[in-house]
Image 1: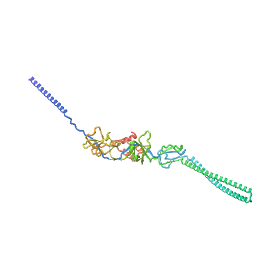
Image 2: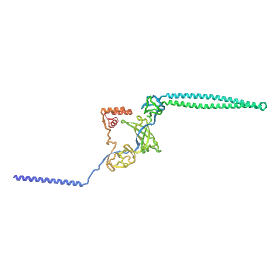
Image 3: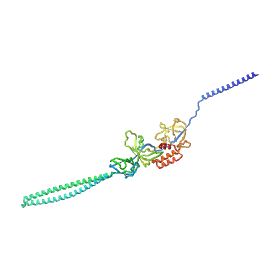
Image 4: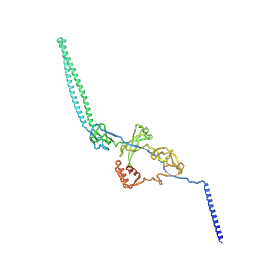
Length: 487
């Protein structure tokens, strides 16, 4: 019985094992059959749709801006030089670096004593010349009187000769009397000639006296001018720079003692390429008076001024390219000669132009637009200008159409997209500037640096101090301030 029971148990287990093996084999065959059937069917993939940012192209009249870098200069700058040599006996309290002076202010005076002595000598010489002229006039009057007397005496001698000649012809007179009368006439005529010579000498003396008087007057004028040159006055109102003298110093003639700069007559000189210069010319080839905006970054705030283009350099210097342009500024508050500034020149307006991000234009001068089926289409456009990170293109081919603002290698003609209009509801908003919390020590150091800056306008300084008083400040502003004050 025991053997039978064990035999039946073994047969049962064997049957179960065989059944399990058959089921497993059937499952494996089914899996292989399904895999082979799936591989033999064609793939059924879905079309990928890309989300892109687009802008609606609205043609309008746009005035492009030409960006350049320039240097501030003063249209009026004067070297203050000593016109006379000597010791400085007076120096204006404002005669220091940065001193403000008005037109006509006395800046300094050189010792005037030698010049005063020269003027006094010139006055004495003038008095002598005037006395000499008076003496010459009196001598001429006397010489003329003597000439008149000699002429009268000669006339009388001639009458006596005529009378003796008449008596001799009638047989009453003698030859000796006639000869005596003739000798008297000759002597009188000789006396007249001598008096005429004296008159000519008196007239020559008067001419010499006039010349001497003019020379004395010129010498006096030169002496007075030399005396006036001992004092130096401001030719115009401005600011002094490069002051190199003190009271009591000995200066030589034509020595430079300072530089006077008119800070209110500033201009900016900047260089542009030849292509940019050509866009600033009018139809007659003359430089237009384009508007300019000058900006100087000071501790995170900009000092700005407006002006107009006035002229260009006459020649291109050796080794340089492009053109040098000069622009006059109006009320350049806070700007100083020597500042390195950013210049924006407003060019002639472009009609029917569209402003797009620079990333919307490919190397072939095409943009991708979205058609009615939300598929991309490549449209060639005419590039008009490049403006920093944007481009200005002609809007005749893309007017009113949705233009992709950023091209990627995945985008191309025929690709299906999901347009996201920039600035519309649901579109991604650009993140604001990162805010950074300040500790008390850094905040105090930055506030002290801003308050110590004397070149920043009061309103800009107040706004910056208000920002620094907040618990958090923008990260870009913090970086600019730390780059200037350190830490």
